[in-house]
Length: 446
Figure 1 (cartoon, rainbow, N blue to C red):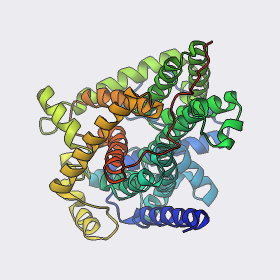
Figure 2: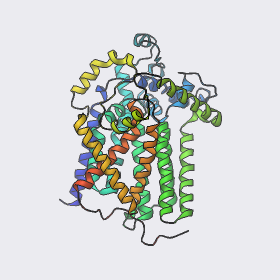
Figure 3: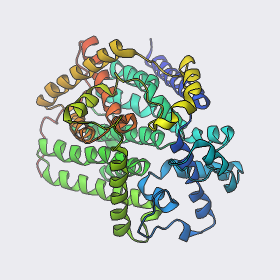
Figure 4: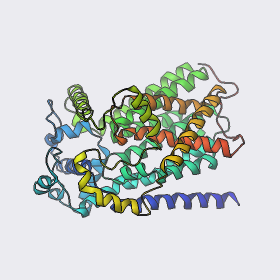
């Protein structure tokens, strides 16, 4: 097959995966957090009217109010929901009120806190589209690592993972988190290739270094703006830039690249969070306190909270591939959406529910992939070093999760998908990829 036909086949494959993700949007069972994020779509209406006092936040924060939700959650998804409302001619009044978790579903319906099915499904499209577009940076990341032998399994696992599909299709923050996380990591890999590999694509090397790092900073900042757990990706970017430059003894470039990327990432995040503009330090302190209190409240659930470090380690190992999909966290929702769950899982668009055996095999493949990356890193493969940095940060973060909430493991799940794809590619394709980036033969020192 000619290279042109291969590229066409690649595009058809990615288009099919995108279509699969989008087809199941209306079938996903609802979640109360969707209603809350839709309520915050009003910020787009406030900004369109120039009503800045409704957007700027002044501490202290009161739980489950607009200022509270504005600073403890990501901003991209709710902004896209609000913008889609504006562009479609929907009114602000058609957005639901803030969902009260302490009250019954019937009470929330009576108070207007539960949207109509039509409005809920419409609100999901922006998040679902970002989830679907995530197949492109996933494919690019796999390509940079090991061409099609890794690009295909990585994108296939991403598009068929039932937990990715549930959370990415909902009107929540995960769709934007998936897309910008993958985009940032893929572009970080491209930057490392351009900086350190003599076999890098010519178009990569023609991009000015300042533009490469600047765009990387924008992507990383958008990841943190998508959801606060995006800080895992930002930390991966900054540490990887320093470590890979230090390996090649370019100390000044290490400082310069990380500083430029970090400053632009912080600026991007701040620009996307107008709630912080009036009192950045005070609002940040209040947001961290509120987030800590919320996590402590969630961890008080005796059914989901971990009792010891052993359970946290078990969650670290089993959550990416071996646990069944979690459709809700609040036990009071069990009777509310059981019929929707049954219908969704009976459909052909709920993903690949691989069960314990195949899930265990994927977990083993991820372990094999991790070991092979350690071997490659010892051989000065800089992309392997980057993935190990990502792995270290993601694993450390996952160990701090105090309860079995599957959504809190999604940053780790993205990494696990890559590690499993590495394991597949390394075991099934027994050849070295010529374009695999390695340090320049005569690295400059500065």
